[in-house]
Length: 137
Image (cartoon, rainbow, N blue to C red):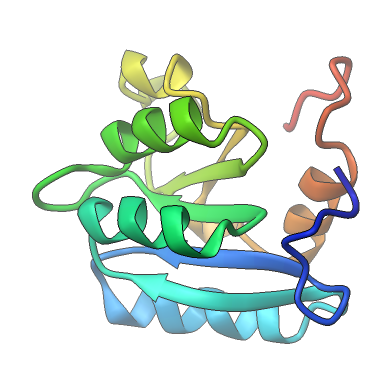
């Protein structure tokens, strides 16, 4: 999954989806500092994310779980069904054991607690995408 026709200037394209502007800004700061990755858009809702993915075809989506309207899990399910090559990382403040059961079957590639999200984690997830033996910790 390292190269795709969706790259911008050879970078991995990233869509950030969160209804909270401070987290979108924090995620943008992480990705902006990460060589080889580039934010192509930000969305404030699941509905907007679905539309943006259809138009932009990002390679990675950083998806908040709790949003009004279509939440991140439902948006992930819809996007993964239509764009299975897209790596979707669910983000929230849930502990892993407290995730809603639908998160596990949504088609997301991984779950990362927002407090632990950073460039190293994003790079590791991307580099191991498609490896059936890789289990993010």
